[in-house]
Image (cartoon, chains in turn orange, brown):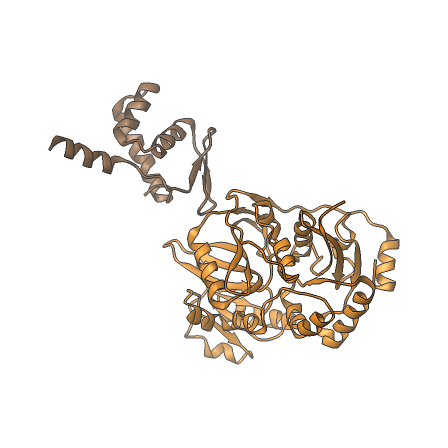
Length: 349
Length: 93
């Protein structure tokens, strides 16, 4: 008889595509837990998210409405799923859905569904549009950023930046622009996809290094693993990476978590310049798609996050193995039209 | 006095390899702080391992000259070139 604790966990982000969501690596981490016997419920937005069809990954999948359909629509669907599955934990994995889940957090708690996500204040103040203020408040070096609310604002920033600059969407996407025309182009493309504001950010030349971490909400870092991208896709995503041992990066991360009392998973994106300066360019308020590298290096952060959501004490991870690598790959899954049909017609599989 | 001068010379002629550097037997060098990796030949790997052991320049020279067919002048010229490259790549300080 297994001593593992049985928990039903609903997880989003099953889109393991060229710009992958973190759902699949999060599930792999939870599946490897020696303490949790998880029934995994996939929550999918699209019916071709690869995680739905991967053998042994999810026990059941339900389609849910996009957050843009409104909180009520998402709530109703979650309650339908909860009535059948008796969820213990929901593990959201997208920036764009976090806001909706934050709004529902207390109501979900009343229904017995736990989450371990940042507070609204933490979520809001680390927004790309607020990075300047965030850097000042928490004493972290950040590149200069300005949020554009309309195309007219571009003329106002002309003297504030030197080219090239980065043009970023509020949730995803970033492009380099070498002149005003390119800014306008990227602005139109990004605002159509992600809405406003569009952020103009000073371009810092250097090596990008990232840290995946987990804060316990009381200022303590439960775990943190830094990684350097070794192979980057045309979308800027890591296709290969290696765990590094960089004390300065860890200190920046621990200090940030201590000062903000960060609750939940996060990813710090940092540029290391040739003169050894560290610039924080972004904080993603969730575990990243490369989080399984942390599991491989000795820190099972998805498992720790589930335990924290369930109100359990989690001892902080002290070590990890530098030099642990990941290489992403593509693999053609063979599926049946009947599965696709079930999901399309009934919204579940 | 002579001992003091020798001690100072020894101190400054020790080449300090960064702590996070590991070198495999096959000459693969990994900088765990930055994630950079390099391949070096057998002689370079041997020199790097001697540096990591804390050997000074003259000890390294004696070890290499006695093991390989190389005279002191050629060794020194190549050694300075090599150490400059290591400094440039932030492997050594």
